[in-house]
Length: 512
Image 1 (cartoon, rainbow, N blue to C red):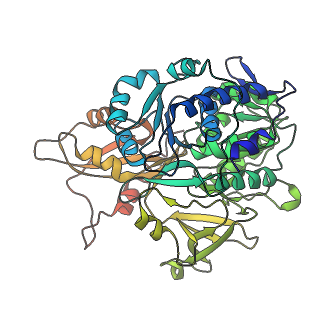
Image 2: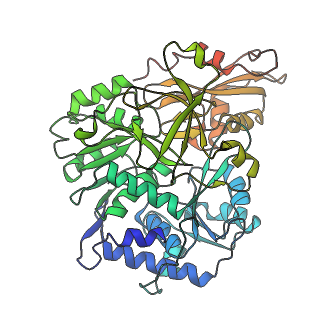
């Protein structure tokens, strides 16, 4: 039950039907997708990759978004390997991921080959190739002479298909292990829930190193065999120009805010659209209402995470109920959800508040090499603890009211505060730091840091920010850094980040 085989059954391979239209004028048919992924799969098979930390060989990719990077993902599945997507904006972080996951093969952007290949070979990676976003690099050169026919390697539903690294609030990033059955069951549920149709065309502008762009978006089109309009990055003007050719768009709240600010984005521009979906970060109710007033469309909000895929969704069909702003909807078919009593539930008058716990066929099997973390993440009766806090309304819709941890979600990306603090604390002039998120009208949350200077003297904000940009991905870098004589703490010495958030709550209120 290789998930690739489930995808391919939906493709009109023999008809010449288009599969992917790129933003630079190229068109790939489903036959092209099948043939190219077969050639890449044959190359992977010839390399005779050996599994290391995982039951099957792991193929890692740290590349810019391109159709070929998607084809490589499909090829890895065909070849019976598991997939590890890595953000090409990562720098120091990559050493940890390579050591922890122990991939057998790495594909990187040519610009990063010199330094990243050294890291890879040091960590035991067997093969390193390059791939750029213009169909260049050593990977495609090696695969050019491979056969365009390949029989997918048989896999069981529980066999490993992918590892996604997800941030917590303590300890190292965790590699969530997802099986072929996990990914396929979630894709099938979404195709049904979102009423995916033969005539649908997905406008794809999300990155594919993340669950939202790779699994949630791409899998729907791949499983239904419907075309994608493939944009290398999100550009509001380019999205506006392609809307007449699309029926479905998936984005994060930041994208919707920028579309709303684009001249010409109105009811007429969206007349051919069937569905707008938002996820990866909370969408504020006023933004939801403004979008509906401007376009005539009610954004469908949903709720998911790396460990579980999509858990809840607002209805797509009118017959199933209304889409409610501020809610992420009801659990998908096959997903069970319950609220475990939260410690402060009694303080919330009249509302049933609890820690969100779920179970179902899409739930991951555990964290790579972290049996204790895995055990802590599941209840004794098998429910996954999401770490989010929510309430259920009279319709059975879930409303998320907070996070049990201090994870920051900015522009749809997760930021692990302790990781940024570690980098800050290593810079000259910094004695200690606290990193947290506050509301931001564009990104949902903006990353902010408060730094206590060392005795060597007060560091400069601009210098600190510039130094961090050389060390970590740009979205993790604080937008502002403030100096303080000390950090507020409780009796146990824990930094009171909620107090810092209150002080800086309105910091970005003037940003529009």
